[in-house]
Image (cartoon, rainbow over all chains, first blue to last red; front, side, top):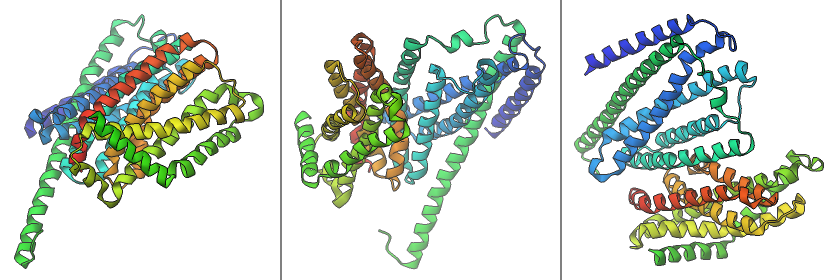
Length: 238
Length: 222
């Protein structure tokens, strides 16, 4: 297990370095100059952000069903949400950096941007709830329901902001996307980015799940020790 | 289940009728919010009139937070939660009852706020059918979503700060849709409001369904 995880980590981060290197060597485009090189990182980061959200949702659903209720799903949901916060924030930051030279502004009220920002808020709320609920079983249940509520709201959000921006302005990321007329080199680096970012995500979640598991075990171990000590002191444990 | 819901809603409204928290605290707060908006946006430039739909729904969203907070604070005292759990009432019914209680309070507040928007902002209110329908659907959505997150955060020590963090991002599409539906009506183009009304309806139905199903899990687990 540890060997496999280590190999994955090495491959993921070596791949990340390679993506950066190849991305930085991409030729400048006429319209966007050096900024077009962001294609090596931004779309892959966005992809992972959505994957992380989806995995949290799926794991939470599995936890909610009594037949598949297992602490494992709760740990995966929590880990994926935490990594999701990182990638969603990175998506917004890299998007802004790209938006400034391309659109002239750091932020536009585009459907996709708005949904992403709300997604970040939902993930932060999920994390906040987890931090203030000490009892592991209760925390698992509460956060699974929170994740479910968040998943329900994302499509509604999507429709709402899409109509909002298209009913009145008809401007969308699709029109502005630099992905038209790209040559193979760009596509290749972007695809490499997709694979590599996904590996980085899997590695981070894996790592986080193990930490979570160790924390649980330690908590249970400490409880057992504490109970044992009280017993020896001759104090009744309620 | 519906009978249980009516019982719980009647209980909550009776508490409100006797304690008058919504009347004495939430309603004045709502009007105060409208006044603050006028301070923030210069009343002379017509910004207030143009933004009145959005400001109205923001004020409603703030009040929804307070109403939900209150609905679950009532249960926190004197072991109310345990009482509810042991009452043998259907958990789905309890959820719908809590949501209905909050919804009735909110609808009453909205009547007050409509008056406030008309008087303070000189908003030209028309398209009443759409306005009222928007209020009913959006309030149902806010109350059901609010009660789901209300019971989620009720058991924690930091419920006052946790509830807004959980509820506001979820309520965002309701505020957005209700505002657009109202703008359509106020502009005299009711056809622009229909897609928004449908979305509000879907939101309310989905949250009512999710809440009814999972409320039992959350209550038992407390």
